[in-house]
Image (cartoon, rainbow, N blue to C red; front, side, top):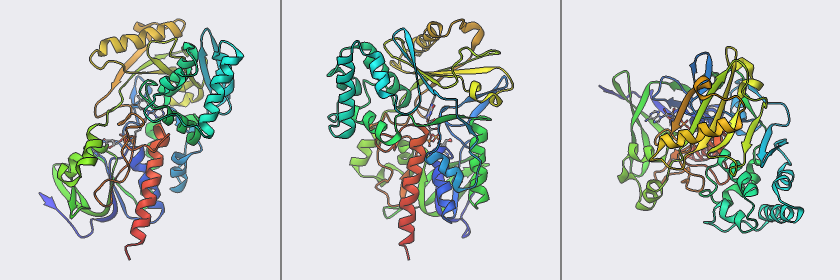
Length: 439
Ligand SMILES: Cc1cc2nc3c(=O)[nH]c(=O)nc-3n(C[C@H](O)[C@H](O)[C@H](O)COP(=O)(O)OP(=O)(O)OC[C@H]3O[C@@H](n4cnc5c(N)ncnc54)[C@H](O)[C@@H]3O)c2cc1C
């Protein structure tokens, strides 16, 4: 049965309740708009929620949360508590050659370069190249981070540490354009202040959803959008399925958090021009393997994020034990998550094995049979990112007032949850200025 009622008209219909979807919804309801969020799953959050396994909150994706940025601002706008615990300073630990460099999130670039350099000359050469790139001489388009660094040094540790930071935030340094990485240091300050959700990601996203509802926004779960309705090159609404019933709502704008490929499928390819379709078709999702390990005692003692130089690991670029900073996030015991970008999607067994072997090398006493709770492979429609940074498409689509938010439309230099929240900010601003001019 299909129903359409006059009451079902919104300023914005949002497809998907991930970080990008809730970010745009929070900003629009705070500005007084009538907003409907439709989420196909039974929970909101998408790749930023968690499932409980053996009393541990196991993330469906993201773990480290930017503090003090646009994501937090969304909570403030709808009066929701942003219950994120920041680890004590220093928050970052880099594994360089045989030692560790502990650093705060800010001002550690020079120290890190000097620690990995073979001598002062090499350190100054690379540091000055970074400084120049930040101030003026951006790396040429098409040059990957690893290629660009290779023009200044052949020091594997030095290249490996930047490749490690790049993987932990963006993706493989051989694929991510050097310009994106330089932009990341400019716009996000590298890795600004961050923390972990005190009671898990699910509780955090639930608080944001409650705040949106409190401000009049409607969020419906188990509601799968089947079609984006387009009339005369302009978006008109969405058709969705809930409890076996089809419903159609009309909306002045539609924001898709389902990823650009899904947006095209829902609206129909005929709604888009060939140039846009070419960009969307060539987007490659980025795959990642995570290993979730648990024990009564922490597997290591650092409460922030450890980034090993990729010259010293097979895959792992990021390791964190959120329960050290946020013990409330488990029923007792500690959970360590490690991340490794995928190099060969045709051999997942080898990819997983490389991650496990890295953990054996890096965590004294690590026993895969005893400690591993879960291994997760994220790819295809549930990837690390819908687009490798640099392959993103714009938030606006060729269909008037149809937008994308989330990690397939990241602005230059942005990564992770912060990027998704930023897309919400940009799209909400565009919608508000378009709707205010409608008379
Ligand atoms: C393993 C892993 C580790 C990560 N670690 C970090 C980290 O430490 N820090 C960080 O900042 N970032 C991290 N990220 C990235 C971050 O988690 C993601 O970029 C972010 O959560 C993606 O949010 P999104 O807005 O793109 O929406 P998504 O999470 O993709 O949500 C989209 C939602 O849309 C829904 N949907 C799809 N189709 C439909 C439809 N037809 N109808 C209705 N609903 C629909 C989906 O069910 C989903 O809930 C990590 C990602 C992964 C996978």
